[in-house]
Length: 198
Image (cartoon, rainbow, N blue to C red; front, side, top):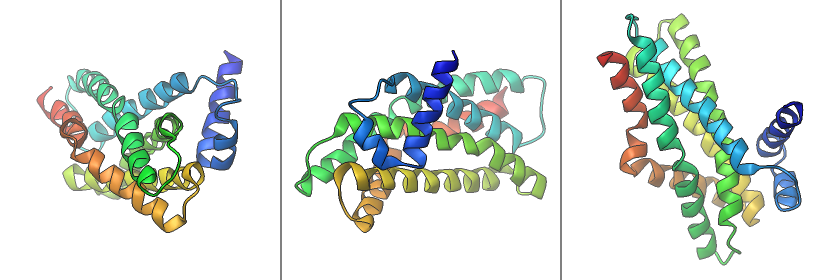
């Protein structure tokens, strides 16, 4: 168990702090990228569900059921996001005459979804400051997606060896295209609606 915890922190370190090491160690590292990607998605799904419940009082006795159902719904939807986002970025990078690295990009995006775990703490901070309801939750969601776009753009820069400007443009456009995907566009609303119906 201790080895898995250290390996997971190594993955987070490579993705958030040292993407160049991620690129160089992706094939050679003895890390289970799919497992760690799913762990990051589980934490992000729970954070999205808890944050959207916390920022929108009143709390009823059925809000725990809403958190559980929203976590499951978010998990199922977030499983698709790395595949779509990684594929779209890889398609655009190949259009710039770069070598295709879709599996590496999908692994990078999957682990970088751990930044969505910041959603619940941001919602708690907003609730404390009096920014609550739908406006506060969309603002918190916008902040974490800007962070996700910045992290993914650093990965795109090193994976495909392109300029900063192009990598930021690729990641923001890919995130925009991914959010247009019907299920992903509504994954936050799933949590929000479940919060008020249960």
